[in-house]
Image 1 (cartoon, rainbow, N blue to C red):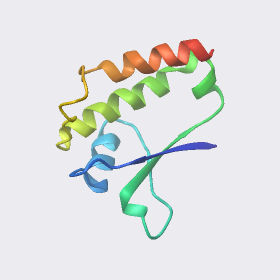
Image 2 (image 1 turned 90 degrees about the vertical axis):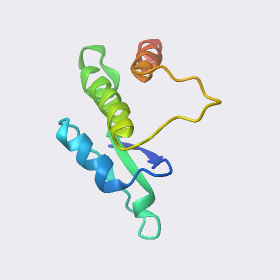
Image 3 (image 1 turned 30 degrees about the horizontal axis):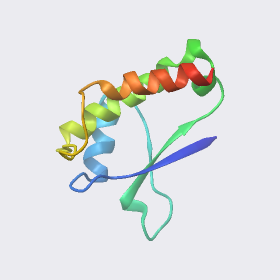
Length: 100
């Protein structure tokens, strides 16, 4: 299993984000390193769910749910970055198709 690690944005805490994702049917893992476990989360990916275009629904659901859960937990992108609600899945889809 491969894991991608993400640090929580300022103001977003583990219980709120993990709970919101769970409510959307997406399970991600908290941090493992004891000294910083509450500062980051992990998303597991491997095999067909990450490489087979017919299975990309799992990846898309995770990205869409993460974007929504971050908003629900008070995350607001910084002004200097352009932000298009729902844009994360569009960007990710382009990358995934290019890699297949």
